[in-house]
Length: 193
Image 1 (cartoon, one colour):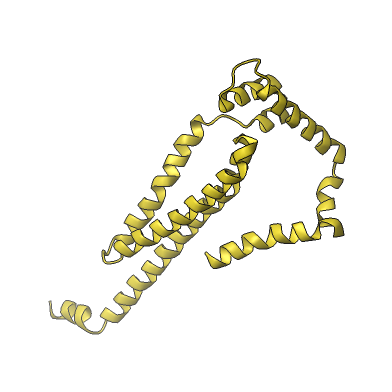
Image 2: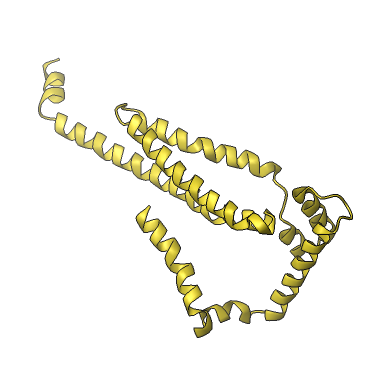
């Protein structure tokens, strides 16, 4: 009994506390990696999906709303982290809180249709036209979905004509400013939070 008290109160207590601190640090690092992975996947896929699915006149606004929602999500996550900080198991609550939006996005992704561009590229132009009609709310034969489908086909043909040189042109002097902005904005966004 006396040895146990000595270990808990004196000699071994420091090592035990250090082990708990290291354990907390490792858990925090795992949590950080998991949420960073979720965030990176969302940052890459959602704007692309929005850009391909949104009507042309609201594409920019929807992508800005996505950025705003991401920023609000970061603020909410920080507030949740601050609220659960006082609990010894707070990191678990924080990690579970980060999992809730991930599960909701996964469930929503199961019912989202493929984009018209993707369907056309895979050889399903009729399905692409159906998705366009359904997402635009137009009736069959009103011509709006057909016009947008013609634009998608024309863009695909232009991309095919450009071939492999299309991506290489991005790094020429003519596109230097655009390429610099496209690379720097995400870097600065990640660095500043």
